[in-house]
Length: 636
Image 1: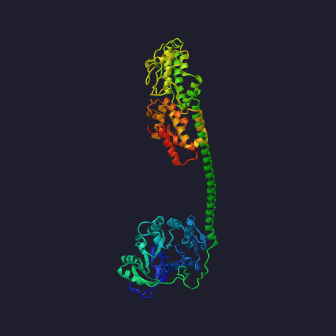
Image 2: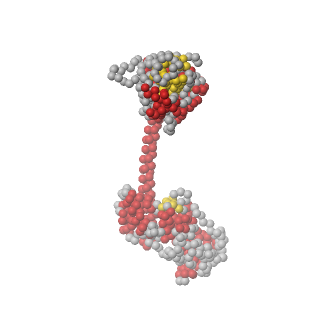
Image 3: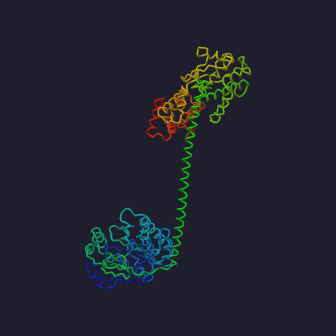
């Protein structure tokens, strides 16, 4: 094969050619150099470059050397007039429609079964799809040739689209450049064809073993010719006739002006004329070859159909999930709104000034501390773990706080429990005076603790509770009211003023008339701005000062732990009291748990629940701002 040649042109007598051969002398090219080398054919449209490529291919096919043609304009299917060649692409006129998944099989047919192939990419509407199938097929050819090492030619039309000069070369171009640089030693040759040499990467052109320069007229293109061949060739190339070219090859080391032969097969790339266009009869390839590729197509279509069905089913399930989530969210919103307002407002209706028991979320928690101290006094009297001087064990866990609340409710008045823990004659059950350190008082929770200490002191002879801080004991207040109260038969104790808050009696919870409470809970009235603002303002104002200050801190910080909010509000920072007050805010719905022990400001969300869908976002913002301003939250 190394001595085989094909004749493709004759020497021309025009200017610019070397005179070593007479005009009309046949020009032959060595087959092995064509199959394994790197070639470049260029010329403006109509100059004959595609004809030259077809003449080379026709001669190779006539000698049973298969080729792989990447056809960008659908010009090469005319080869089927004489040769059995597989025409693959995207059009229905092709023998088989192929995609990137067919690349491996196409490479196998070309190299292992010697099937000539035209990959017609002119029918792909998506340029990326066309580029991907070229890239993958070239990669498969290169990989297989590393093992086979069989002389084989790959021809690329419009190569400037894939290996452009300058930036913009993608993976397809990089693969073709790789074949140009390394394909020869594996037996894989490549020929690039372009009508714009100035747009083709010069690294590719300068590495070519043979080049054909047809007529060029654009200044940038003739400059490329002058730079590579010489200025005399750059001037002469503008006057080339159709089919004429300067042929330069490494094996002859000469530049000849030649006239290429006309192609023998149907010229599908010829410019249409006025005469009738008739497509000749074309040869078909073996049905077995097409069936192998068709199996890949069928399998691909089956997978795509299954994927489409699965996507459709998934979309339906996702839509159903979204619908259920919306329904669940709406149900939660309605449930939360009903629960929060039922708890907050109905608890207010039981305030003592209405004749109720005086329950209040922030005061309920006070019983926790009171009950705990009452247990401590009782245990101390019995010599148990709550005896004087023993550290009080208080859990921070919210579930245990809940247990304390239930115990406090079951035991009744904490001061009475503390009094009952003594012998009634001023001595503890164990014969020793009981003393419990008073906690730093910052509200009704601490007042309840101090009440226990005062009651215990009164029962043991009027001695004030040891270690009292943050507030005055009954004896220190100067009016003797607490000491007198401590000796009453009812066992009640006076409550000191702490943190500047008067906790000696019940406090209004924000609703002064039963009609107002009924109006605020009415479904229609809840949607009226004035009623909503007034109700929220009075609900916030009914809270203790420290609790209000905690709410204001949540508003400023966005989210915080109850202890952080308690300290910022002027409290002691004791977790028990912090969580007790935080529970008041949480039950009212103005704060909500976020994560990692932190709570967030939720007043705007609560207002939005009240309004439902009856107000736009701007109106909700204005209502929240008005509530915060009137309740003093914006000033703190």
